[in-house]
Image (cartoon, rainbow, N blue to C red; front, side, top):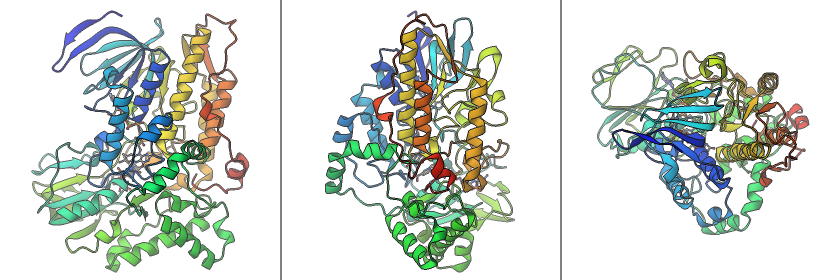
Length: 582
Ligand code: FAD
Ligand code: NAP
């Protein structure tokens, strides 16, 4: 390894250094990737733009931030010791606890020494002659790696609308996804929150407790189900831990990659009274599992209408002012956008100092020195919170100049929407892997499961390459085309593809409208990845093979031999439209 050093403000840059792999990002994906590659004896350098690990949970420090998958399931499953030693304090963990968990993992597996923090990757270029990636950073690093692994996150590139007059506003403007590390105190202030997605729905009740006045600017209302969050019951925690491997296995076999009770019967087969009872039962369980009340809710508009009406009724039951309640009631598909999970969101609008401004007809006109102008009225505020979401799934790729074979720019290839083979890789970019990339279940599954499956697949693939002495692996265009077509076809059967959500890039003007995640269900997808692997990486070209006579063994990580419950998650079940939450 040759090292020439160039001084930067905080550390020496690494120039002309060689690694087996470079990993971009130190969230849950980058951390686990590093751990796996190290275990295989590979050298890896991780670059992370933030000053610490945790990714999403490092950046999203806004008040009220917490997970919407139960903590006992929203965690790594690769280490039984880790599962046993970590204790969660709440059913749905708040951001500081999840960040503490990420920091514990970094400590426990000694990850930090290979991570360069405060360093943003700016360019990655495939050198065809050397068959290696050259990776450049904003700290002057220029390193060479056989593999370039993008662990950049699906929800990591903040969407900050370019409001006219934003520089004129004299107070602070925060984005939920870039929340300051110092405590933000809104006590006595007039606060404007822009947006009513999950981040807004979590933060609004807490901001309202501090602010003197809170004005919420709503472009589109959202459905939300109460979390019914509670402190962790130690008996329940003990019981889960006693059977953790079994729970993890059940999670992997579910369409969403996490476990909860669901019902596959169609809503339309039930009487209105039966449906009402069923919805109440599932509502009382709270959170995302509410969508498991029936199997056809995201397939049949008529079925969805019944749950949507129930959701709207719940809003009207809570919100005192009928005009405000009307504004808060969506008329979209229930669960078409990512379903929000809240703690006291709708109740907040009954507070006398909280008001809602409808900007659905006319967008925010501009910011002034002291306020927000909408619908021709200036709303004076001291601070603004943009809960305006992310350039989802591809935004963090767009921020890096990625160049593959023949000078092909990834942004150019993806101009009309991302094209990948299995969401793992894209033709023209050999040895570049993407963790939870577009075209994989990613954001439609519990993400830590999706991350682990991708990381394990990639590690197994690299082991195979080492066995046979292959230098590069690259997706083949015809297999990629078929996969993209399949992803699009499957999306069409779900009502989700009809909502204007970030799943389709519809939240940010100018982005192509393509349903990006794979909606066919997590275990079916895992099965497909396994099949590709066991067929010798079907659809990929392995190049530079030295040991072509070697009898390669399949390295499939054992836990991904997932039993597919064919009654509920099979192509036939999907065709019969009886799969909750896809
Ligand atoms: P991230 O955590 O986004 O990490 C990516 C990292 O890459 C970031 O730290 C970023 O700084 C870094 N990076 C990006 N580009 C560069 C670059 N060019 N150079 C250097 N570093 C770079 N999912 C669930 O399953 N359940 C939940 O309850 C849930 N709650 C969420 C709540 C919020 C507020 C948000 C925003 C997302 C939530 N998600 C949830 C999705 C969440 O993003 C994933 O669960 C998971 O944390 C993603 O991990 P990751 O490592 O893939 O990406
Ligand atoms: P989001 O769901 O995209 O919501 C952004 C909100 O801002 C929407 O209401 C959007 O309106 C609005 N908006 C965007 N641009 C605007 C503009 N120019 N003017 C006015 N309003 C504008 O983003 P998010 O709330 O950050 O959540 C993103 C995802 O992160 C979630 O769906 C979820 O997957 C994850 N998340 C999870 C949790 C959790 O509960 N664990 C919490 C936060 C985030 P439109 O709807 O009209 O586009």
